[in-house]
Image (tube, rainbow, N blue to C red; front, top):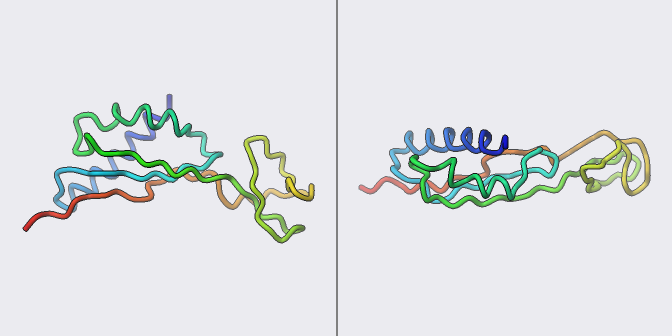
Amino acid sequence: MHELGLLRAVVRAVDGAAAKAGAQTVERVGLRVGSLSGAVPEVLSGAWPLAIAGTRLAGADLVIEETVAAIWCDACHSEQPVDQFYALRCPACGAPCGNLVRGREFEVAYADIPERAG
């Protein structure tokens, strides 16, 4: 389950940002996860409590925004969605195409870190 390792890296990054802001807690973390990233959103959600246990993120909600993979087709002059079986051809017109424009993302979209009181 590499998702737990990915989440531990997210927790380290967000924990560092919270510490720098002087916050003791984090309320919510948003992740942007592409359909070709190799990370499974359901597994990420299930592993979240393990990843945040004993950290300032304990109790924080995880919000996952799934991004559908897409290519840019020069023949169609448009973006076309693709799935994990994408065979380097535009699914609309069949033209050869290897220009993936999104779908491999795995990034922190936001972290809700409370402001320091006073």
